[in-house]
Length: 418
Ligand code: PLP
Image 1 (cartoon, rainbow, N blue to C red):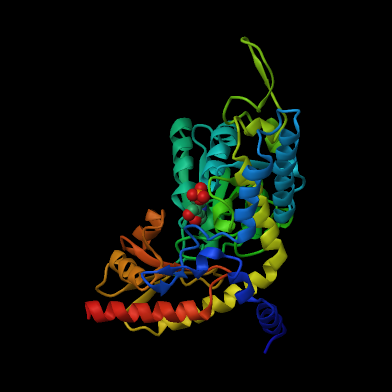
Image 2 (tube, helix red, strand yellow; image 1 turned 180 degrees about the horizontal axis):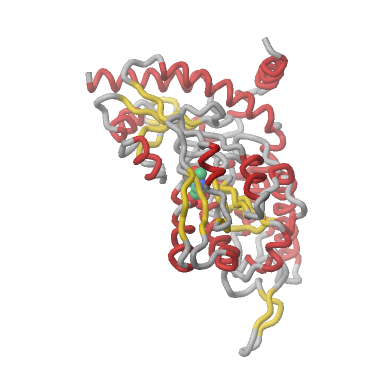
């Protein structure tokens, strides 16, 4: 056994999944009289007690609007909201909390960058580069931008296994490329892109880089400082935090010079009818009353993840993915979609003669939650020539037993469809 394998084994065996599971109340529920097997965390993850409690206690004990009151509750809420920003900043290795803007989620983070930084940088005849494995959130905002500016959206292709084709990617980084935006971990395929290498290749040519980190943050340590990207987006609900909250990391030098995203309260320094002046970032990009309790809940989710050690989480999930891959590959008539070497816990699959929605429905009756559909990645489905796949997505609370239940559930599908 190699040294690396030994260290992964010892990291994953140090991970106590049963104690993790006990922290998630929803995981002990039954569905149709069967214990729930939750394999849909790539769509949205379940919440640990500490996250639920952090939101509840904000509303129960000290809730008020932030940054604008002198009373005690306003101070307590503001302190907790800003502490959450500090936690997210440290968790992702940002330079300082001012580089972290609270947004609704990854979708809003990318739209923010496209409609501010993007409009500043991308003009007629320019190009924006993405990859063939993007979620719609990292396609449509750039299409809108390109349409508005008379620019072109260029796509770096992937191989049949769902990996970026490096030479083709490099060829598309040209003088016309004004922005590169790519997914760190594909939600439809599980592919982990070489974020630091892709960033370095673009930045060598002076091209700024946006990374869609929605599926990365729940599964692996994120260190913006070593990736070196210009922007990075996160969704709270995928990393065991609340929905309706996320974070956009942006280099301070960009945030300082970008125009505001939305106008309103909070984001200004002075307002007259003739002219307004903007607040400093991140307030400049947080117009209106934010999702205060959501941000505090996201801070609690970060505390939860930090308490687990993300390197151990990644090692445990790698072992689970290997087991899941072997188990599903052994099922006759089942095809896995997305077989990249470097992959996170996503098992997208097809079963001969059975529609993905039927797979999802039959599994549901067995108490097993998977997603069936195009996973907001229609171009990925088109690439494989399918309308939809069934997707079992793994998270740190899943077990080999969950995978065995999935395999048994697939056996039932065979009974129905022959
Ligand atoms: N990017 C990826 C890779 C995703 O998986 C998702 C959600 O599924 C998003 C972006 C959009 O995230 P949100 O809906 O939280 O804005």
